[in-house]
Image 1 (cartoon, rainbow, N blue to C red):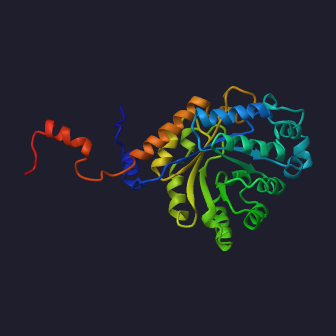
Image 2 (tube, rainbow, N blue to C red; image 1 turned 90 degrees about the horizontal axis):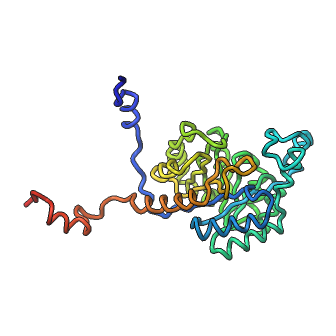
Image 3 (cartoon, helix red, strand yellow; image 1 turned 135 degrees about the vertical axis):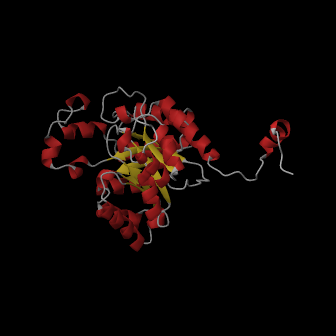
Length: 311
């Protein structure tokens, strides 16, 4: 039988970075995205559950201008997975799921009534302009669009809130270009930068949690915070992300992982999201050093149980 403690495992443990002490409460975003399935009543219900049952800090949706974002050929092509499609073409499918700016204004009002933050990912310049008009606390740029500098330039000039950027499907040279662009505009300290692997769902070997350490080491002094946008199964990897220094967490949220649509399978249902929020906040409290050699909670036990005491 092959021994458990091999040279490769020894190298892994030796090369682990020193654990970062977070000392901040994690900020947790339920990414509803398009999992509302085009239904405002369902979107409202998801906001209420995310707030009252799951205890998230924010909910996030998605905004696209489909005929601007897609070529004519892409718009008129069939959905690559017809079983998940809400229309005869990919464009019709996307239009079915799209909520207009007035509906997003209503989502924002519902979220704020529940005491949580509303936000949206914007996929094109028109969508960015529409969402800026709502003045949310933060706007997200998805991995697919993170090299669209027209969107960045508009946000730099017209939006004063946080700009969250996912780094899935992104070369390290492209990361440098993004941050340099915001530094030149004196806006990099408004950036939350997310480690991310773009896949639905992502197997554990492709989550690549150590990217958090790399991104933090490279950009932590330039940006507001380092986040983790996960598309994996379960909630174990998020705890590892917290220990490595991520403070903002985004997970897709659904009421039914078997529902029709691409994102549901990589989403957390309400109890999973509730446990994620609970566990992240509890572990964040635990990620500290002892404030003194013998804590107050230990003193009674020390007196009762300690066999030999120095001095």
